[in-house]
Length: 544
Image 1 (cartoon, rainbow, N blue to C red):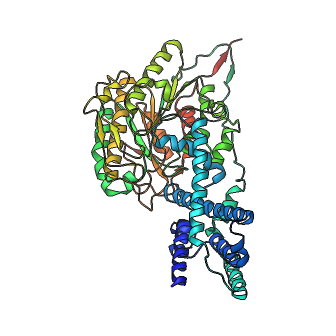
Image 2: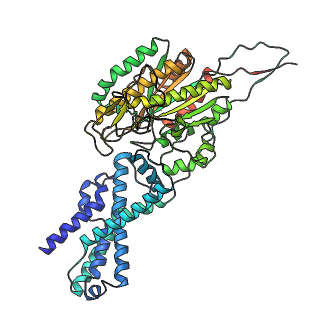
Image 3: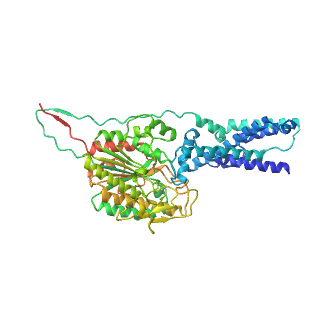
């Protein structure tokens, strides 16, 4: 009976420290969750080795306390790494990198607390203390479950210890991808250096050495409005139920704008992110380099490389970044992604209720950004480029705003009125109305963009709409790709022609493009080449 109960306890600890094996990257099947991970076998070997009289006598001594603390730390870290690995594999489809991802915990805590203080020193220290206490607490609980209460005869004891160590060693040799320790050590290894290719500056002006020449007037550079829509993913087209619900939404978008002279072309781009970590996609759009993980993102942020924001600045654009879901930006980020004005959460001066991720409604944020661009037009005689990071389509799809056609939003207090918010039975961990909330948020975002175009956008502008990544599973299918929709709208026929030659399909609904889709890192060259092709600037003329 004791043996059966002990094996049962080993099984519980194995499940708690090996659950990530249910989502393997390799051939390893989910059945491996029933095999104790090597770290558990090593702890068992230590406990069995000290199961005799000497261990019993030393239980209250310093050696016992120190050894217990070490073993608890090993088990606690194994448990923490296991669930971090499972979470990342399930939601982001890649392994956790503790050296990079632990630094994101304060921001995640602040997000779950609905932005109640910012990821400052207090939140960071509190998060660190909670993690340490939690890891050690769970470690001691697992150690208690594994603790060996009975003395084992010497020869049997060492045979058992040897067998446990050999079993652990065998797993390290033959199943290294399924050991938390090996995965952790691998995560410490530096990633390959990011290959950064600077965007070239705009072509130098052509000097024509003639007495006098009349040059045809070049097309003026268009304003550019880039809408990055949270969780706007390929699943809207790969899932039949979503596709049917979205058809009338796209139809209304086309009927409204196309009747005013706009034309559109659409396709898909492959995002570097899945289910979250939007900043990897935002950075990739501008960088022209695929920022595949946090380490690549940090490398690029410190590289000082040229990118799309620099290129547009060299062309004379006034550049605005509107990111209502971002609380702060680092000096390194600002030095690389160079905008003339940054509008982050506090800059919008929102006074309404908390609305999903981003705190405020995207319609409110866009109205403030539109006003800011209008003010810049008065003082800056420049073409404008605005990048809007929309956030209301972020999980959990719980509290979402109604679209207000009159755009009379004031300071946001209007959303405190009855009927201005929609509630869905969802939360951060699970949801009874995930599909309903997700489709509603997509309808809201596209309707808001359409209204913004009609109210704030110059008819000669370029409008670009792109998703940042797929929504997390189970909103996306298990077999979902990394692709996101990509649309470009314009009233200039040559833009439509260029977009179709690049591979986009006419109208707002992308065609059934075969995979693999172009990478999101191709976007910056797409835009700069379009400007060079459709809007070439007139050459400089020298007169003798």
